[in-house]
Image 1: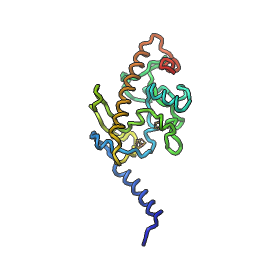
Image 2: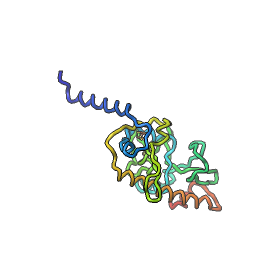
Image 3: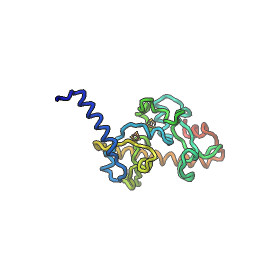
Image 4: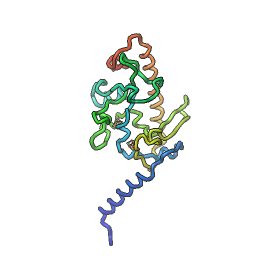
Length: 212
Ligand code: SF4
Ligand code: SF4
């Protein structure tokens, strides 16, 4: 019996989804494998726990959304982030050390994640959203020295639904990796400068110091 085109499409869609579920790349550090990781746009990484950002990310979001920096950013304590308090990027404020991240909605999801699990600020999303779920570290000559699927995914802290697909552009990946490295380094330098400031202030003072 002939199967209708609609039924065939249903069948393919269901099975492609099925393969997305059963063929995740759980652990690899080969660039050829990592470039084949495709995002299924499940939105898990947009909810948990915090999307850290630099002043470069924030500037792009301010320009894109027209919203002021204070409305886009939030400052998270270590009780939420559970990361090493001596890491770079902790901002000293009058009420303790905080890391700057994207503001969340009440349900804990990023403020830009729509009900349909789409990013409504996609063109201006932070660099960390662009490279996730890959962790990459470059040397001074922009050569890869460390590359892996994010621990957050490997250790299943989030249920990332990535799947193996057509390889992404190596050039684009390296551009994002370079941008991530450069922008993070310049942000950390500015934070270090702020942290030496004799009068550590509040969030608005920090944002002003960062040029907002
Ligand atoms: S900016 Fe977009 S991609 Fe990044 S966490 Fe928010 S919704 Fe997700
Ligand atoms: S958790 Fe994985 S599949 Fe889901 S949106 Fe994030 S990167 Fe994409």
